[in-house]
Length: 581
Image 1: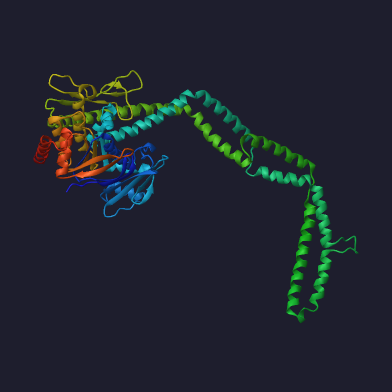
Image 2 (image 1 turned 180 degrees about the vertical axis):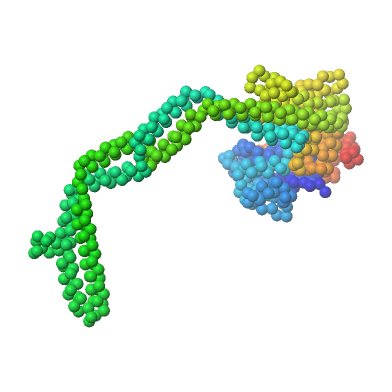
């Protein structure tokens, strides 16, 4: 059974759509309609679910917000399921619900598995779930850069391995070259920086500051500057506590406390409570005696030395010179000195560093040249297989004589290149190769870039062939083709439908088309219908089955649902599609 992802989409108030349910088949679903606007809304809805750009103009006039919801079947072991669960989403029986809400003011919100998530997560999930191929994408494939990306993905591990190594070496070369350029172009500035650092380090070394020295000196200066006041205060406090021997009549705290202790001590045996108070008074007396002794010692040791004060102030001035230039405190100055010494050693080693970097640049360029050659070889081999596969597809799309080839070349340069194949060439983050897809539409025609060598119809078929071949190397299980059959008709259109039906055997395919020959091959046919009441235009999506499908194909063929000739042709198309799958 074909594994499919997108089961249905629910669309509300988006563009001209009021409320529509788009149910998709596991195989091939065709979406048609009388005009392109409604079909575009289906594609736009899927784009919003895949994290595409939101535009407030998409909200239906008069509505507050547009909502697109999708129901997806995913393998619980797939990268998309794992990423969704990491974001807090819940899967129910392998089903993942995603939604996007766009307000009329332009705000956008996304939900995955019942959890609000950044809109960017939808884009991450889309990389593993759905590949979109449309008119815009077709124009993108005309660019050589996109063609190189397609070829690299088709080549698989043969290119991915050396490309990963090349990318790592390329990033390293960019970093080394930037450092080397800075060293060589800023030599004067770096020399000036080194001189300033050297002067500052010498100034700090001459002062020989100690950690915390500034705080110690500040405290000492404060004490020396107020020595007389400190000594007087200590003497007064000592006299108040211990008394003055020269004044026997004076009252002091120690004498008073001793008297109180003697009074209660005499009667303490009569009451335990008073005994406790007596003990506490005794402790107070001891504490007073200790404090009085410390005050006497403090006063005796206090030195009001003006010479020492002058020395302290001179040292503080020297340290202030350092803190004014190199840090708030001496600790900050010492940190600056440590960092400055390391930086000076780095600057003094510039010449040696320049030599090392130059040698590393040369080695990296040699390595890049070897890896670029490996990339060229791998791409050349894959290009042959890719071109053969696309050419075979074109034969099935009514272009039996067309041939597709790849041009893989390099541009020589006089300077700043790497050596590939014995010559210096321009290189970039993806190697040195310029990759371009060429088409020779018929024998004798020279291969030309596909944008110049194909008509509109041929270009659409070439792009479809490229996309079908590329899809074989793309792991996503669902593909959306938005009118890639534009400019194709007749037998070629039948072949387009047949190729899409074959692709649907191994993947889910959704095709927005205007060709009945393509729609006839679909497993499920959806029609976007418009109604107009004279003031408001509305659209809805309807599944076509049986007689309804014949009528829709008749309309697409002749513009008339009831034309007998068109009906006969439509039935013939359906029968041929069933037989030609």
